Amino acid sequence: MIIILKADTSEADAKEILAQIEQSGLQPLHMPGVERTVLGALGDERVLQSLHLENHPQVEAIKPVLSKYKLVSREIYPQDTVIQLGKTPVGSQQFTIMGGPCAIESEEQLLETAQQVKAAGATVLRGGAFKPRTSPYSFQGLGVAGLKIMQQVGQETRLDTITELMDIKDLDDVARYTSAIQVGARNMQNYSLLKAVGETQKPILLKRGLSATIEELLLAAEYIVATGNPNVMICERGIRTFETATRNTLDLNAVAYIKEKSHLPVIVDPSHGTGVRTLVGPMAKAGVACGADGLIIECHRNPRESVSDAAQALSPTDFSELVQQLRPFIEASGRTFIPLPDADQLGAS
Image 1 (cartoon, helix red, strand yellow):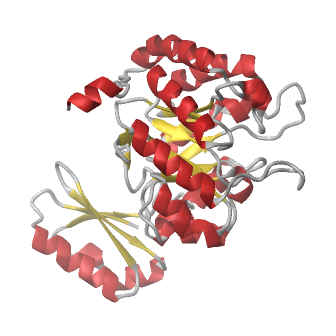
Image 2: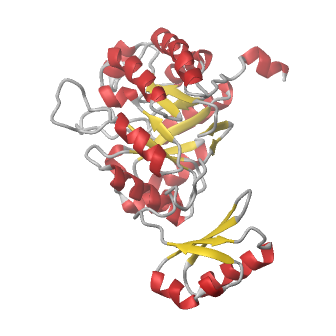
Image 3: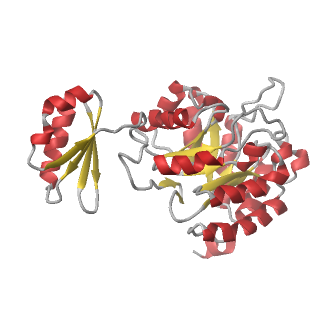
């Protein structure tokens, strides 16, 4: 339920009502606004009704939250949420570009790619240390050794970093060595994993499941936020349909719909969304145009040598050209694009 307080309500009055909500066993929410304060109560609505808060002199109205996902809904939080991913604000007026290889193969490979995506304008380095592969014989990643490489490369290039967490047993290591944690498509409804990352305050990039509905995706995000971590970014990465021309079908309807229904930032992954190198650029531009807050794009120093997802990885030259092509789309969408300063400027500062 949403409890709207009158404009002249004091902080003491708000705290009194919040205490009543908490003492009744419900989860209280405090959402101070510019003009008035809104409170929330999550739990059994019958318990809230028994409190008769509508009789409180400072309560203007009580409204139910109709959507199944409460905390990630704009019904509770109408303003856009901005996630601080290290030094990178995601969901702000500043558009975010994440780039890097599908898999961390070596320190040399990751460092060279990181330097190139940074030069192009990316502020977040992506790369997999643990790789969920369909075949058990495919490269599974370097594990903790890969995480250490990512931390070192991130520090050297001053890029924020993100990698996928596949198993709860690796949570502490992933959280220790990276700026943000990715929950992959295959784990979108791994509720134990969602609760575990919810107990951290790390930024979480939640990828849509291969066959998940938008409601299921938002409810998965609700698990993380309800467990205590509000720092969730939604990622549209394509869904499995009857179409076989591309790896997946990138559902850009979902981007606009989620932006309407939820306050969480939305990132588009045109690499997995298409699986086709030549289609990454057009769909990246479309992602910007339909309201995405950022893009996550695969780039490898030499795509032909990539041990994972070579068909969709951009070369550094292609990545740089795409970022330049994206600038007018970003500006037309009302956002700014601010790449990191180069190494000389960083050293001077």
